[in-house]
Length: 374
Ligand SMILES: Nc1nc2c(ncn2[C@@H]2O[C@H](COP(=O)(O)OP(=O)(O)OP(=O)(O)O)[C@@H](O)[C@H]2O)c(=O)[nH]1
Picture (tube, rainbow, N blue to C red):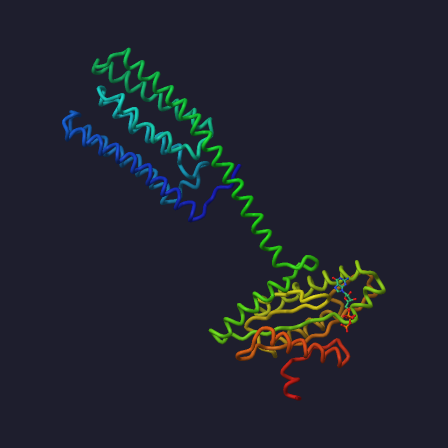
């Protein structure tokens, strides 16, 4: 069973379909009035009123259900079957009141049945067709009984033609709706795989952090915000200390695992810390080097954030097998400056990182402290 689509877009489509149905019936009524005006149709005035009021009642009921969203309680929230049944019931009045024009009136039924062409399965079509056939047969029967105005052989012939027409429409209609369903299914699958591809193209395969390409895109977005709205941001360049030794002593697979777990630790830690860091994103810059993007964050705040991370790591917040592993990182922190290119910002963070390594690792250094000293 499909999940009901309760989105505004789906409701808008349902209302559009309702409007199509309403217009079809309105055209039927206008044609009837035109016939009266021409003098081809001679029915009493109350018949016209009955046709108009019953049209408003049938269409009004469906419109009310749609606007009040009560349609969402139905198994078919599009109300397709209900609208078709009401439409058939309404137009059977023409069959009843216009015995000399029954052949022509049959044509009025066709749009109602095609209305369901994209939505019905063959069972629904069979049900609706049977209803249309029964209601027309009843209209002929009652009208003949009351007014004795029918040529029964001609009426029988018309009903047989009608049944043949209904069968043909049912077959074509249910085929069309099967094609539509298959198209919808493949469209959904296509959308899902596009989304997967989009996500994968942004992610680093090993650590599931963002990749270089996405980092560059994000940097450009933040830089635009800085240029237009003076919204500052900072970057932290993190590099694991003595990572080569882990690879050498425990093997490349353990090294991979350390990278994965370290990335997960940073993301988890940032999620759990202050709200400014919650907007952050982590990208793998290459090898055992990561870049943390911190929107709306000054260099001072970014430095505090990096120091908190380092402290948590040193206190054993990350337990990796074998548990003899002692993990730490060095970091360089930099805040965007006026008219600075993204590459320049990363370069300053990298220089600060280099200094952190030079000064014995396990530390975070702000880029501004280097320029101050220079
Ligand atoms: N397991 C694993 N190792 C990687 C990956 N990418 C790079 N490396 C390794 O990371 C190591 C980085 O070594 P170095 O650049 O000397 O850095 P380091 O040993 O961390 O030393 P410092 O940065 O100076 O503290 C190299 O041995 C690379 O082979 C990866 O995806 N998986």
